[in-house]
Image (tube, rainbow, N blue to C red; front, side, top):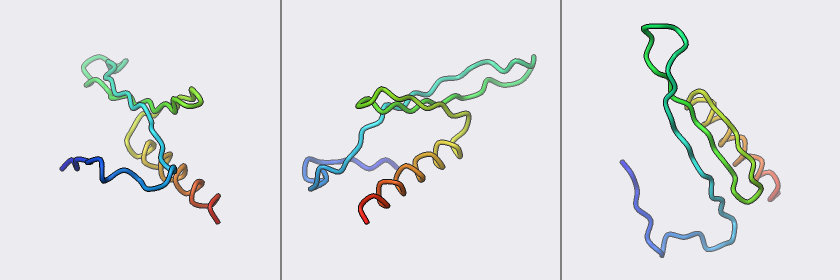
Length: 74
């Protein structure tokens, strides 16, 4: 289920981050195999892009990114 944000849902502080998420399918190099999904995540503020081959790696990246930000608040 997707949550909708209203104007009242915006963070009260300036601590927020936007990422550009890209998803696409590439054919598998082995004949007869299904296409595979690829994922990119870009931080447009610094033009840094990271690539992932599965959701678990994307999740791990985001978890580490968030933990790093929480750690810097301490």
